[in-house]
Length: 131
Length: 147
Image 1 (cartoon, each protein chain N blue to C red):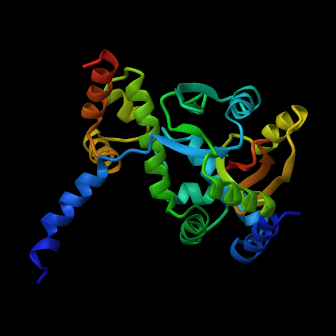
Image 2: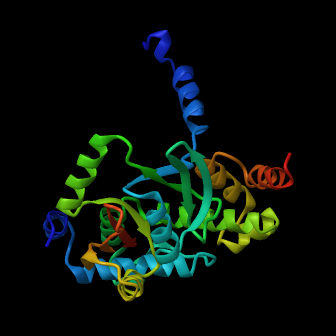
């Protein structure tokens, strides 16, 4: 066993909760990945992992470094970027990734990427056409 | 009160300047560029992106097949002797020089083992992630990770 492998196991045993808890949190994350386009509450996600909402938020943040809500929004925006680049309209993309209004979608998109969905799409089209 | 050089406007300017930077290339020291290109394309499945002759060596980059416009990995020659010491020390301790994301570590582990790749760490759970470490035959340990 290498020094790195030994250190990794030591840190794992000191830092992380038991494997079963990690597995359940991982399942909740995969649930979010699968159901990005659906409207879901934190309680729904926590229930998927069989935790109370607040306990789930604490554990998720400990394991992934961000809250489940932050993760969900980032995953939705990442998918939105891919859909925008595939040629879909901003409105179609907005509803395809689980947002209920284009204004909240546009606001969060700008917050995370630095540009609005329309500006992001236009920039890509310009790059592709060589201008 | 903040001095003029540290006004809110000053920090906003700094943030806007920083936001313009992008990570386009990251590098990996390799002991032989030709051997590295073969391993990183034929075995790992990356795609050659750029190959520009530069004297004794090349500017040689590969990209992920799934993200051809993504970050390029520069297979950097070790023309600077202290780099050899650095790479050797990391290798002996089993410390990976970099890590790549995969969808399924176990599947990738089995695929690479069949191709003759040597692993110093088999798939190992680390909290919510699964990791494994292999020898890239170019002087490095490389980690694959599934989150």
